[in-house]
View 1 (cartoon, rainbow over the protein chains, first blue to last red):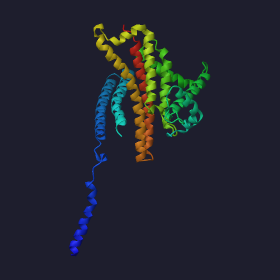
View 2: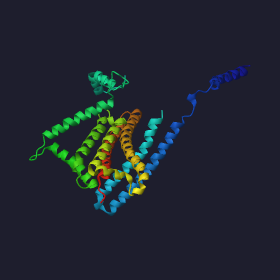
View 3: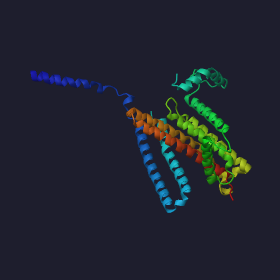
View 4: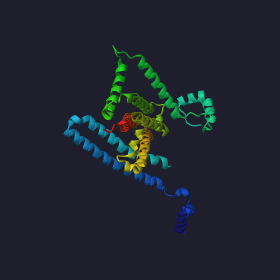
Length: 100
Length: 243
């Protein structure tokens, strides 16, 4: 008897799970915009880093071969890095515009 | 009521009535009639007044015989911009230095004012970099027309006249994309800097946000330089002579 009443007391704890049968609202849906925004930003930053690495490597090699051309190489490097950076920033702007 | 900085509160207290009635004459109703001046406009006006006073002070202290410290600083800045435009544009580029130097000073101080507590960068809202980019766009188109007359339009038609129907839409879109890219580059750099500082401030309130404020200062300088450099490159595209 004691065992059965303890069993029933343990089983009555399961009644706490009743709200799971309630109708699911829209707030429990998956936020696809945020997930894809995270992936796209990671992708954009990764490819931007690769491109900037290539640009910097080329500039360093050119500077090593011909140190007298430093002004021109420096100009081309800074311009190239800023233009590549801005492409990754376009993705960031879309995220700020679209993700709540 | 929107969140206002102390300077915006002063301006709205003094000018809200006249600004709202001016806007209503133009059939625009401001969202908050007691605070029609937004933070970005107030900060822009502050930078404008500061630069005006700075330039007047420097101008009053110019002398050929014994130049002071401020004169040296401004000569260095003018030398930098003139050397760069000489390198990129070539001959007769001195006429462009006033506009480029003013643009550089304005964008630099707009970016840097966000570091001071109690102020925010006006370039962190999209409309202010759009204004700077439109000024640069109108300036280089105007210089192109002034240099070459109506035959400046030949720049849009590409290398051969047979390709003109294809090249003209492409060139128009690429020129408009220059405005877009200048705007978004400056806006995104400043806004992202603010966001990142804010995020790290909410994580670790002591010590770590200082690194991001330092990053904001560095990015401000770099983005000013890039804006002026790109305007110089666009000027070179507009006024270059095809020999």
